[in-house]
Image 1: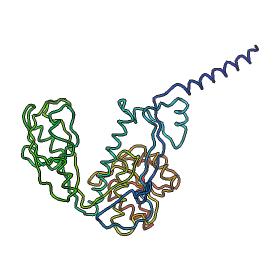
Image 2 (image 1 turned 180 degrees about the horizontal axis):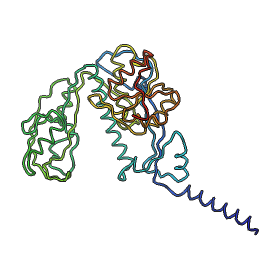
Image 3 (image 1 turned 45 degrees about the vertical axis):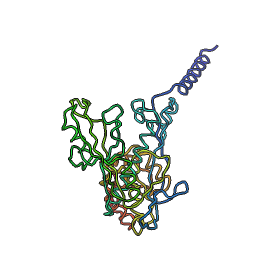
Image 4 (image 1 turned 60 degrees about the vertical axis):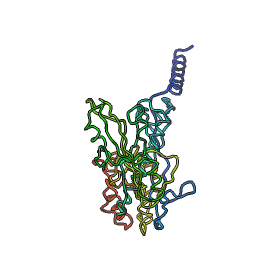
Length: 365
């Protein structure tokens, strides 16, 4: 066989071998891509995303779209060819697998965690919107979780309202840990609670809970933080009682990043007129009870998905502005927001058409 032919044959075989290796050898990466975007003012799967009962609502126009990111599953392992294609594709992003599923987290665990975050984001969105409207919201410190195998197991339960610890009224979740750690490990601590069942019943009947219980728990020792301290094995959180019923209906979505858009959609439904003036506005961002907007993941994917659906403006968390501004889809204006008041102010300018002074995102943010 001539040397030139042999060389070409060997090169071809080597290329085939490399391609086969690229197809069959898995690499430790996962892929993110633009996910669905849903108008919080409209319907999804045949029913309104935001439903209010017991309070007057008003017609809305335009779009206030929440945005999502689609990710590969925890069990899926990309091959080298897919990873290279993802790196080259403009609308996708390839990241280390552990970025999306740290510490060997399974897809079921990730789904459960995202569902819990999504539920919490809905509650915070309701609180933030109602506070912005000066509608009173009652808040309670509750037992959020009980750690298995700790002194609190079987004595306290998720959803129990914590009224006081050792007779001292509890006002914030942080108060619980502070009061417990005033004890030495092995000492008793007394919780005054409204049992979860009583709290739920009272809310349904729109009455003040009447049943309270005193629960004595002997503290244990924990050195998780490097110092020995007294613990009972719970984490405290906040629950709320609203003056009317608010339901958010959106399946197959997880994580906390829709909070801002839920809050704005609810605000719009509860006020006359249109927040957007008929414009197509999308956005993202976590939101807390006080209306502060926090950063999220996959901002580049969300701006692409929003623009593909027709968004003209994108409400962007201040901490994500620099990343988002590095590659802005043509025709989309990124608006920098840090609080719900910032967002409401930006929407006022958008609906009036006076957008020259909108706080736009830059790569220097």
